[in-house]
Image 1: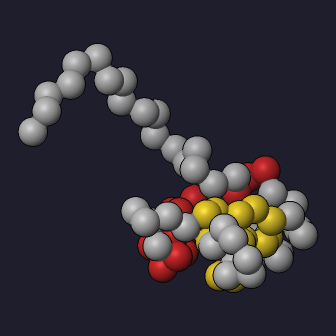
Image 2: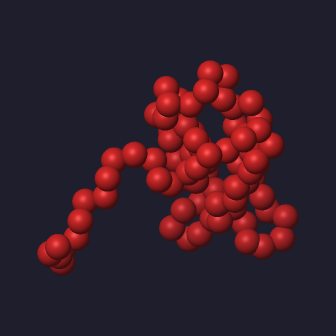
Image 3: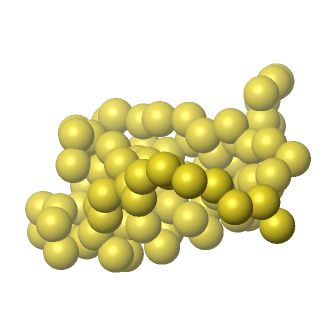
Length: 81
C-alpha cells in the first residue's frame, strides 16, 4: 500500500449532487463508468438524498431514469417536487 503525505481531508457535506440548487423541472446527468455502474450511481443518489432530506424543502422529490439512449450511458435525475 502506498503512503501519501499532505492529502487534505475533504470537508463534510454533499458536494457531489446539487440537491439544494435544483428547482422543479431541473435535471442532471451522471455518466456510468467501469468503476461505477448505473445501479451504484442510483444507490449513491438515493443514499445522498435520504441523508440530506432534513436540509431540503418539505416534499422535495426526485425521479431517476437509466439513460441508455445513445452514449454515454448513465443516470438522469429530475427534481419533480
